Length: 300
Image (cartoon, rainbow, N blue to C red; front, side, top):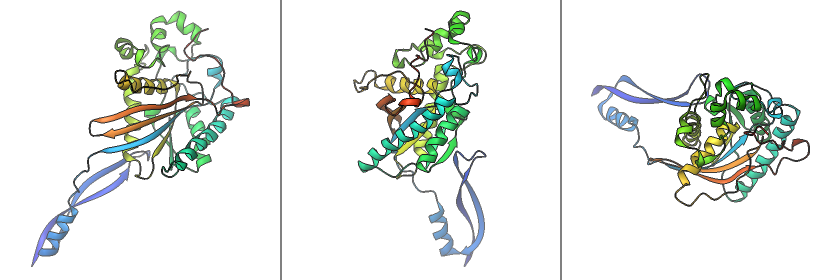
């Protein structure tokens, strides 16, 4: 006996930029023997979703130095390339990542990451490329990792920004103050169609948590290259979560160019739980790769 059967099917694809997997469902009608049709229809139904329970290490790297970093000029989304020191820092950072990954592998963790995720801006992409090449990984860009859009502040020296745009500067200079930032300041948008800290925190946290959910089961470390403003908001997110729990124990350092920060993120149905393992490590930066001593948010 034949019957006309509608069978569910699933296809995994990618978006135009190749960065995000997308699952779509469709149906197909066909004429099959009744018993076979019942078997096919049953087996084609989507499986029951397993409860979300994932934990990953996340290594977050700030890009290498640019001339604007050296000139104490506000960059934001302005696309400034690495300078000579920044190129040296990118190479040194690759070595630092290899050392970190080797220690996790020795502790019984999974294979080397297959992908390095980076901001779309050249200074981050080129830093990410040096790391990806060193661990033989692919490089994938995601605009959610881009630097804080700083509107009218971009291109100004930090001294000029403090003098001419004091309100915006008072917000910007808190970029790496963690949970000490007031909710009011975190919600303020920089003039000239700039973003707020909350904007940056929400998009960057969502990006990394999406990457964790999509990572292969045997890939326990996510490698991300981004910017100071984003790194500051990841710090804020983790310290806000742990502010009242007493679990936030780490050595605080200035987040210099090409520093490496290590987070652990545990994903459940209720969201991601962020913890800081190490913050803004620069022990891999020596000689020609040693970072400038200037504090990013200071005018002195």
